[in-house]
Length: 376
Image 1 (cartoon, one colour):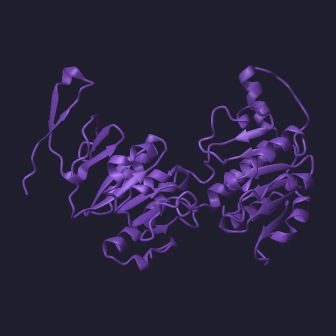
Image 2 (tube, one colour; image 1 turned 180 degrees about the vertical axis):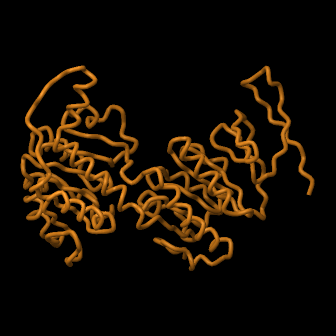
Image 3 (cartoon, helix red, strand yellow; image 1 turned 90 degrees about the vertical axis):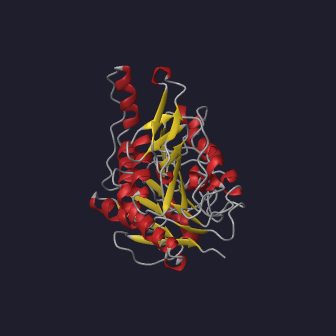
């Protein structure tokens, strides 16, 4: 089939006039206001709507609010998986409207979603979540019954466990104050830092990440207690207690690390009652989901010095609003939901996408891996 030249107007660069280029339909990828050419790897400002899709091709929509370099990695790697797909990339849910109605597949993270995305997804058959948690996807009323949802499972142990340790060190050594003083060019010594050695860490949730974190904590000389729905012996844990006995365990904690999944049962799980039994010298670390913690109760506990400080990677509302009180609290460390991310994340994600895409192309959805919701 002959490929016709495509004229792309460039209104913002008047001296270039009109550029003439030749693009195959599957190499046209719209990412916000940009047209990406696979052959040239160039991004040109443009305003026309996407070309009508080739009905024989599978339309993959990638929705990622991540740095440009990371988005481009996903774009190029997914495009290379099959000659039977055309791939569209958008960097925010507000930009999906021109593309979502024709999308067969959606690749995204739950926290980056919005209700309107799924409301208009008339052809959608499969959502590949790029995280372990699928809240923000499976709990949306507009998710069609005929949509299969898969996730990434088992890859977050190393990055999240290291994030937990980084927060524990930062809190125990008061590094947030050190960084503030550095910017102020202020030489100041406060209360001596505390050691992790000899302290007790309570890990709420005993899944893959906790199983990675516990032995690392033991190697640093901490006592490790786990809280789980299933009491069992787990390597690296000194003790595992049932959820109904959680308050007794939390009362012993110098560090309370949250790694439990977010479900209706765990919504607001950590609240005023929890803080009331914690040591005044203790620290809270949330690497689970924002909804697991009652933030209003946490703010009161921090203001009243019921607990010493908190390190928070997740929040009830994300991105965290610029006027949120957490930003200005001297005893809170805020990180932008990046506990599970690292430089090799895309390399871990692509094999799962590749396996499931092959199953999708062959109509064998029952052979997909990491299925968390089966289409009805």
